[in-house]
Length: 412
Image (cartoon, helix red, strand yellow):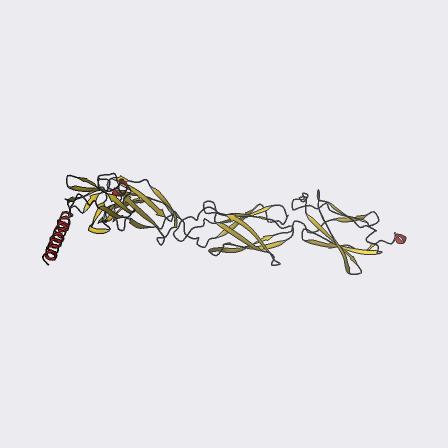
């Protein structure tokens, strides 16, 4: 019995000693945070230091950073456990969370913030757009400035940024404060057209100018006129159509290259078109004179935007009648020489048509162009075998009818 009591007594002493040893170790494994600062400057060294008497447990520091997550191994010296943030992480601003981990347990945790470095030269990225707007004050271009420190970190919130713009004789400077990393301003167009030059400045760092073009607004209605050498329908000369100086509603001359369509309607309601593009606000189109008496009603359009007045041009006949003759047993018809308003020969290429008619029925229509004022037609016996034909000859808007011609060999 005494032996049993003695064994129990020894076991109790052993258990008490083991428990005391564990308590001693637990007390020694305490880590106290020495680094009290909550803010570090980007680009500077970032260290987290602890005081510990532990010689058996070396914890690791788990870091959650905007660049990612990583696990740091510290250095232990003279009872101080120090963790150094990698240089890449130390250059990037933002909130950093840390967790001190030992034996897969979190011993301590905290957060700190890396703020922009005010001692480094500020850099600015500018974005301007759209790069073209219309005059009139309704459209705008937006300047967005992104100021950063020398490590490409956005500057602190509410940092003032000067946004400068120049238009014609006016220079405007506005102060905008950064919010969510950017400072911005809408710059509206004015009534005149021209260029807006924009630049920014922050902490004595200035940018180059960027430009936005202010184009004239859409065209307003305009007028048209014409000029020509004469009013004869000679099929040769040119009538020039031209617009007034086309402007927008704010008195700006429209952009070069604005397309103007001239729509021409003749007396038979056939529609002709000619086009011109503006240079210094004026568009011109060219129109060939007709080869017969006619009148043209003309109006111009900038499609879907503006239109002009309309007017009528009249073209007079250059001849009242013309000569023609039959020869070679009426098989050759010679028309001309055709002469114009000064008794000069008509230009080459004047169209002459001949209708071949037999017993009041149209058999064929022949067409040739003049050369030196004359054109010839051959009435071939291989195709025209009837004994009698008559002819209607038309040129320059004038039609003349021949007598009935006999093609019977027995009567010639």
